[in-house]
Length: 360
Picture 1: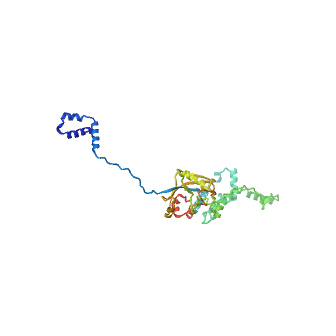
Picture 2: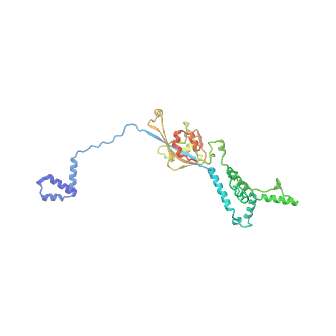
Picture 3: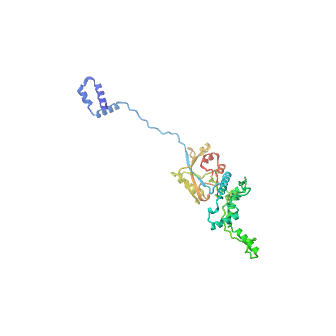
């Protein structure tokens, strides 16, 4: 039964016996418009409910000021030092590889009477072993079984291995030949060529030595130098106008984004001589600083409860921080590792930033 038929029956029931059957059938065939008009009439007869508009609260609203901070970091420049177990394992692998390769004849690797074969012979007479940085191998004799290194042996020291490689690279293998030629000339009564210390002078090719892993800044404790702790990540820490050590930060200006604010703070704090890169548009962490009650009483804006600082990640590739004529009132700066940052900042500040810093 549709809505029109229901309305017709309701009207017929109100009319009672004053309507005939034919009229009732005629009314039931009317369109839906009749039902709509009747429903509208019923709605108008019902009492209207008044709607009350919401009223805004008259109590003062409080908020936090938003700051943008930058976490400027210098990544590690060299690989870390090996753990003693790692160093011992790598040495064991190199010695094992040499022992497995020695049973093969050298002609398996080089052709006979070629320059490579002659060079091998010269080097082997000089080294007394194929390898140059893992100790001498004595595979024959009564002590051939005793081939393992003892604990604390010099062959396991990385510095000794580097010196051995450099010494071998500086020698051409002709030193023994020169000594033999001098001995033969002396026995025959001939003229001995110009010597240095009783041996024939042999020209050595200069070999570039690796740079030390410990720099001068490490020895002197210069925390303002980027050439320190080359195996670790360093972070820029500055002393603000309140005398506290923290990351550089400043308030957002109007509709400034965090990314644009980070670029502005870099120039205003560290100068334009740093080649930096702001990583992404999303902050890596935040810190909330609540004002003390006595500070709120004397503050020009008592509705401002504190500061919320959102930190952006920044990498430095070259240059150095220069606080001369900085616009943030900074007085000093340091380049510190994670554990050094913990000692320099407040405890609450450290709990907010510690997860943003890398262990190495």
